[in-house]
Length: 270
Image 1: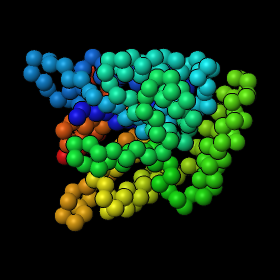
Image 2: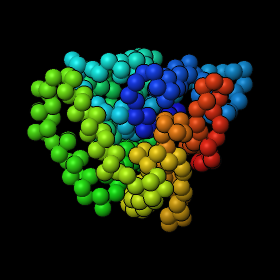
Image 3: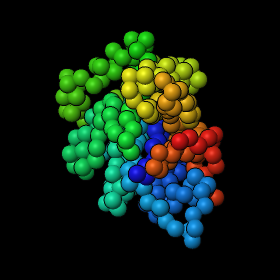
């Protein structure tokens, strides 16, 4: 299996640098350029196409969109994901703390897999747990309550009847509130998420993959003589980071579209 994992693009305007870079990155994936993106030479410039892409939350800085009323600035990236899917790539979207209620559009209309929190999946005989990770820190009670309210059935029904301009204004306010309630710095949040991941790895998972901390790091654990892995995906704001997985191997890299290749952030892990 060949797959790409990324998180935390927080897309707003199609003219933003991170938006343009992500569009370019997805186009490169469609054209089979993944090996050059991770700095791996391939004989005869042979194209390598991925099977799956997993976007682990906060692709958008806010969502609250209805299938009949999509925020216009999001249309280019949505069309690019549809293009990838039509090319044979399985698209998996995991909701974050900024984008939710996504299944009605991406799942029901376009047939993409949408998970509201955790995706539990066996990949190449290893047990993966993939999610945004905003619920990994159970000590943040105020945020967890705020999250519960925003994702409630009452709020879902309420937002469906709002005029579009008001809906998007509320979405922007909720985005700002979510940032304020998750204001731990990246290193501190990474350590909390790493502790959560270690518990899950001891419970039987082999690989934990999360976004949310905006830190691109891989941490290994030796648990009962077996190597297990926690991956934090970083973001598309500062790092433009992504993970490429192929047949048991992980490469953590960041994207440089101007030179059409990616430099390594740190390591490769198997």
